[in-house]
Each structure stands twice: as C-alpha cells, then as structure tokens.
Length: 143
Image (cartoon, rainbow, N blue to C red; front, side, top):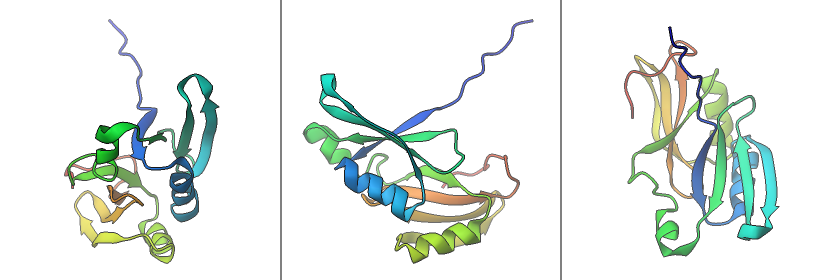
C-alpha cells in the first residue's frame, strides 16, 4: 500500500503595481496580516507575503516588471473571479469590507454552496467573499 503525498498550496502570486500600496490595501482594507517583507538584493525586489488571519495559504505580492506583467495587473484571469476568500461569518466580513470602501460588483447571494458576493481588489481583480454552506466544504459551483 502506497501512502499518498500530503501537499498544499502555500502561495499564490498576485501581480501588483507597487508593493507599499498593495500592502496597505490588504492590511488596512481587507484585514490581512503581513507575513513577510524582505528585500532580495540579488534580484533587486522585495519578497512580500500577506494572508488573512489564520490562513495557511498566503498571497505573494509580486511587483510587475516589464510590459507583459504590467498588462496583467488587475486582470490576471481575463475577468473571471480570481481568488476565493472564505469566511466563517459572511455578514461580519461583508459589513467590514463595505465600511472600508471595498467595491462589490455582485451583491450577496445565497447559493447551494454558501453565501457569496464578488468584490474588486485595488487593481480590479475579482474575488469571491464566501461563507461555505458547510464549513470545510468546497463549493460545487464556481463563479
């Protein structure tokens, strides 16, 4: 009997215009935590990682370099929802985000897989704020 490897996604890269404006947005408006912010001299860039409190998956804020990467800022997935921010209390986080001036492009809706609303980050990438119908369950339908 072979043992299946244990794997998980640790980081997701998000192309950003500037490190500091992205850090401020994620910390001050979404309530994320700064996990790491280090200068990498050999690459002349910063290694900036943020995450929601308690999350094991983190977001690497990657400053765009060159025209191709710059063209992807705010549209990394061609207009589809890009990231899914799970919550254990939709109403609490929705209100907090609205109060912080986060732009919601689709209002809250109850679906079989949970309560969801779509918002934009500071660059225009689309995110689902989602409280799954059963915590720890994966939604059966993507936005």
